Amino acid sequence: MSFASIDFILFFLVVLLGTIVLQKAKSNTPKHVFLLIASYFFYGYWDWRFCFLLMFVTVTAYFTAIFVRKKFAFVAGVTVPLVVLGIFKYFNFFISSFAKIFAGGVQEY
Image 1 (cartoon, one colour):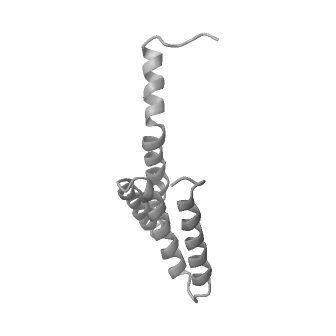
Image 2: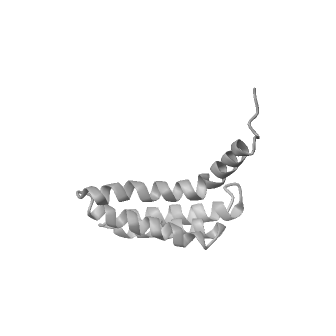
Image 3: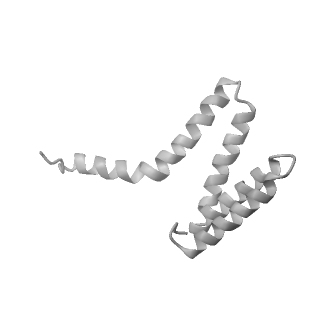
């Protein structure tokens, strides 16, 4: 879903109106659940298979927040999202950089 598309504008309006309506609730839980579902829909609109990865990171963050006073939970809560980000966003960059370096593709400037 591109930010410059009609689909995004409609999605944004629905989420905005839903958030405004749920703002009047006594608890923030319905609003948080609505925004979580909207986030999954937005991410899944691009490629639904990555929703499982997002669910893994969400569950990890949720349970580490519950047990944050324990050092292992704190380290896991920071490390797991960073590792997932590093693999899925920067893996190809590092692989291609190392391949250029070891193939003699380093250029002098």
